Image 1 (cartoon, rainbow, N blue to C red):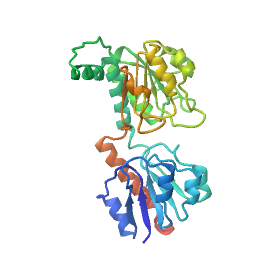
Image 2: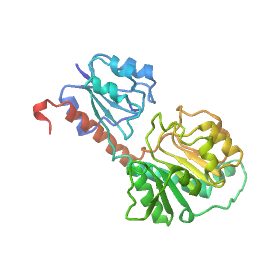
Image 3: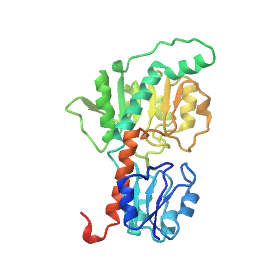
Image 4: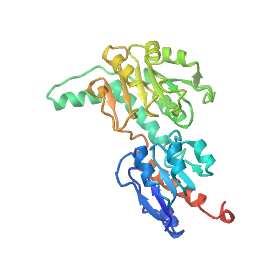
Length: 310
């Protein structure tokens, strides 16, 4: 029997869309590790009987794709396609799809939550109280801050909308979009944004061109009391430079949901002025359900005979 591989760490298979795939004659195979797969693991799982896959963020490199002999479709459960060698997929005539709208609210809300945590130092107080210390740090208001968004696509727009509800000023850098939300968002160069922002939040896909877009030089342009937020992709931030900046009070604090290597086990975990989340940006129940539904629906459409496609 032909099979469909689902490589996300978890997935609800009790949906009409999965039932539709089974009715089309496909057997559903799940990620046996319950975590993000390595390149070698996903390559091993893409056996010749795998016709299509619902992908997470595992590396679907040229080597992986070229080795998947009968793969016809890849449906990303999420937005970013940076983990997929799209050129190799096109060479193999593999249909590619993603679920760009489903994670938007969840990621935007997490970005706001991390901003608020850094401003009010909730995590700092939680850790202190658990150790028997009673600390009451002076916080700050989100509405009194200038928030600089690097990337102004779906999620950047939603973050701006939420932040403006608090009364915050929003500025943005995005060479591909000049949407100013009716004149309420000011666009500027990256360097200008870094200098002007009280909070810098990343909302761009990862490419080799923007690897470490936040490095020691970029951090040097930021205010000493600024906050850095990354809910986008690991690799956008030079984690060594960030750790040094936080240690040396070049930044007030930071919050990360994504890392260059996951699960994260590095020096940032030793610092008190950073909030660390476990790549849960899209892990809101409602958002996750929508992503999984759309990812499966994309495969239903991709695997239909040409005569039946919409």
